[in-house]
Image 1 (cartoon, one colour):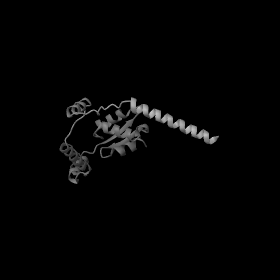
Image 2 (tube, helix red, strand yellow; image 1 turned 90 degrees about the vertical axis):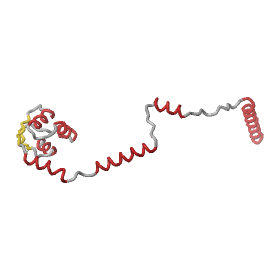
Image 3 (tube, one colour; image 1 turned 120 degrees about the vertical axis):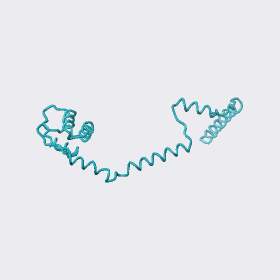
Length: 161
């Protein structure tokens, strides 16, 4: 009896597959539409619409070379001769100041005071340094002797002692 059931099932599958295949073959038409072709003008229009830029290989290579040379220039350290005049002027113009920090003073107020007394050269740079390195939360109240020869790190360390 099992053999008869398997044969019947197989015959049913064969008839089903044959009927579906013949229906597909005879009644469903394949659409012979070719894939869309794009012209150069269509491509340029789409590039403009997407706010992109078209470069020739030579232009692209030129820009890459320029970027590489600029990166090399940045990685080359400055010569000692360029740094010498700065250190000489700093030695001549050493300024000392005792900074008084009161409760509630902001970083910008401290930076402004240091800038006015010529301890630092750039207020914004000092504020960024103190904030970026986490010193802004540890500044202590009190008097701190500072001079213009100190680095930003040294000043920040003194203010957070």
